[in-house]
Length: 391
Image 1 (cartoon, rainbow, N blue to C red):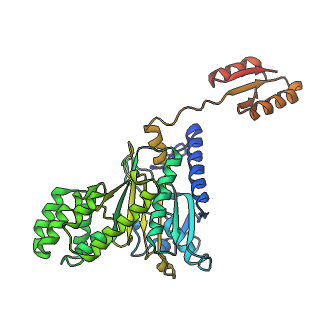
Image 2 (cartoon, rainbow, N blue to C red):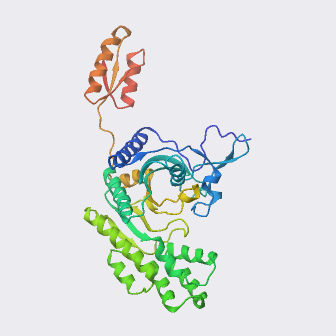
């Protein structure tokens, strides 16, 4: 029988030394950004009931959740995201608190990922939720907070892409195909799989009018600067779709007025899971980082599953992706603090300790030697590239 004592599960990692310090520093910057913008911090249990995450408005399939049983036989999960537990908290413990709620968090989430696909199963997420208001001002603030958080962390080369969940829904509302086929269509557009999309539309051309067919063919191409929105309007006569485009324009103008318009582009082919998002959606991408570094949007139907109808918007940022972005851009440098080892005889402990305190106050990293012999202490200091002081 194989013993796994010396190993860790696939998709997890040990975070050591400088990497651990960098991660804690990034988490601290994110937390400070949120709190200074009026957000209040919350934490949910690592273990939640499976029922919290089961419902029609959830994006994660049950096979992606880590499950176990409590002593009553009830199914528990390691929380696979933070938005849903916060929705539960908002609808129960915070339902009488003055709204809108402005909540923030930094926590680990757990998702089963396919073996060897390079993704972690344990992910550190940090983000905000604005709950209890439907205004586009809230959507804009969420995006502005996300951009500000990335800038404060030192990420420079990134882009936030804007979309709208109702744009795609409006276009396909009269298309005569079943939900399974609509999901296939969504995936082809989301992944910009032009070949599969054209084949799909050719097979189903009798299920939609000619104008809808034309729009769906063009949809994956409708990304870039804000002029794309005007291009899209030339294809569309659907009032709901045009309203979605106008919402994106309104939100963009607010972001531009904040001086952050240069970080924003548009992607009308951003088509998230159909039932979850209900309005403005967005994703952030950084140079050299595979996948998105940040994602979010409006989800007005989630909290009602916990007994309270409350509109909401927010985002989550992947902390490890921020660190990768900083590494790829060469913005993370080695620790340059002065590092010192003080060796002392037992009778000189107080003198050595006082010296260490004084040096630490000046910003140095100081260790008191634990070795009895001077040559052992010197060897240790040399291997760790530390200054050696004898007292």
